[in-house]
Amino acid sequence: MAELLTCCSRIPYLRMGEGEPLVFIHGLGEVKEGWSNQFEFADQYDLIIPDLRGHGEYITTEPISIANFARDVISLLKGLKIENAHICGLSMGGMVAQEIYRQAPEICRSLMLVSTFHYAPKRLGKLFLNYRKSRAESLPLDKQKDIAARICLYSWNEKNFEDFNKFYKPNPDFYIESMKACLQVNNICLLPKITVPTLIIGGQYDAVTPVWIQLLMHKQIRHSEFVIFKNTGHIAKLEAKDAFNNVLRNFLNRQKRAS
Image 1 (tube, rainbow, N blue to C red):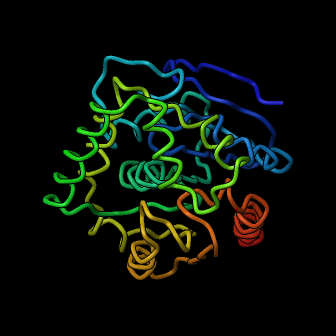
Image 2: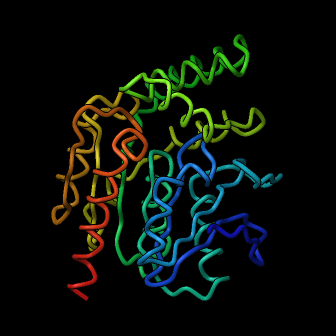
């Protein structure tokens, strides 16, 4: 059973299970409960699942940035007296995972970078941001969520839409700033320096972060493993839950045997 806790840094998070620490970091507009399909990892791991600032229950007046997202997670782990952990991030959460490695590589036992990217061209990012701002200002929230579901999902069935909407809860006060933070990412020089075991995951029909981006990341992190999930979009953890969990578990089990 998940337990909602708040550490000394006032970061809302879920914690359950026991074993090696495993951190799940959600994507843009998501909340920590969006990892519910992965709660089963509590049978082997000490799961720590935070809300990033501006998401879920983490309301703040402090600046939004990928660097600050990462500092929050590092602060949370230090507050829990955790020396190192396996770090798994989806989309924006994958950018946060990369930044955690930049700031505190010693805290990362391994990285799992899911449907994410490492670099956003400035001109393209500016055009995309202006488009999303315009859409946010002109459409009601429920319509925005419906469009987001159709972009993120490959399988447009009722159950997937229901699950997506349950955990996709963008806060209008923080959403654009969080998106802007994503579009400022530049980890081209960081990736070749990553030395911990790394798993990179992409979705065959991901319309948000196309799978060729994860292929480029795989080539930059030379020792990394790369998995593409067929017939999934941006959220394989939802659309292909069992296969996704098996891939993560097999990867994590190999790290246990190697340690």
